[in-house]
Image (cartoon, rainbow over all chains, first blue to last red; front, top):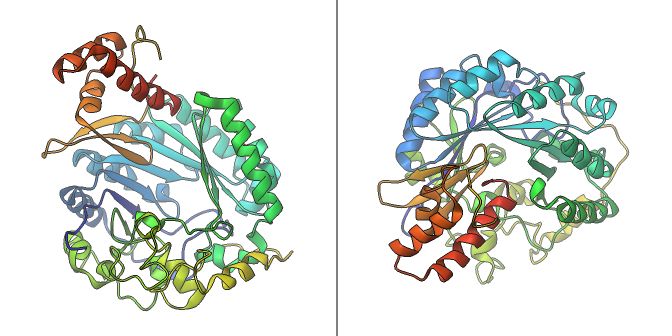
Length: 356
Length: 87
């Protein structure tokens, strides 16, 4: 590929601090290495540079982004550059005052996550008593002029509750529900044997979602993120490396994927040292797996190479130790047996809760 | 969606115009790239204009029959309504 593509989406991971301890978190294990967070001015600069590059959406996430006292200022800064703004939060700090300031500041969309539809299970997974507070936040957002998505990450501990999650969303008259099977990075990879759904759960879940989509039609959009150890082909991670998405970590590293920091064979660059545009266009970390030229077989000769984009580089690295091979989640990968082994390695062990 | 409906955008749905003339519909956690007739139709969405009028305007502007434009635009609005992007 010769022309450098235009990034469309910027994920601002404002902080990795969080008052929850969900064991399925994709944040890195070494949370303490990210405490030297960018300042308000530095984030504002990143947002302006992103808008100049052609980015249209800014997503504020973390960790828990509402722990940043300058969140409203950053939403305003993004809106001032013409960016669509999205807050990805667990909602426990989203009181009336903060929500009003965010909406007045130009916030377009909020995604609030719950851990399960049942209070006891949700609080057990979160490692904190927070479910009822989230319910309050959801009700609050529904009364404001801002779009809402309810998100629930699915794993073995809550996979049997999909029907209840959908009913929970329906009772609240939520328009958009995201049911996202856990992706195994960071803390979730560490906890994979405790979180891996069973094949039976996955198959049953698909039926429940299909039936609900039929039943709810235009009343609710259900986004279902497939579990990626169970399919024949890998997810088209980030729609291709360095192709549409850029993530900036709390301490300023620009990554082609939120999980990319785990790839220790690449040297990522920091927005404190170089502009986002230069990093996007020229950094070896972005160029390395951009397009299709880097691909080995079976991707190189595969007709799906511009559908899957080789799958996920982070997963290839985590599972095989080489970020430059076909994602082993692909059934055509010579390393696919490793994924099958991970999928079948289910244990009853308690997950390790996320902590700094 | 009926031709007599007065479509309006759902929450968190915005049109975006770029310097190169391209138009996108920005939606929760995504963006749809619009072709010229779709962009022209969605630019007319204001909650008061009936869909029939939107169809007629686009048909005239792009010099196609109202029947043909009507089918495409109705289809577009139905898909957007299904996803809660237009009401």
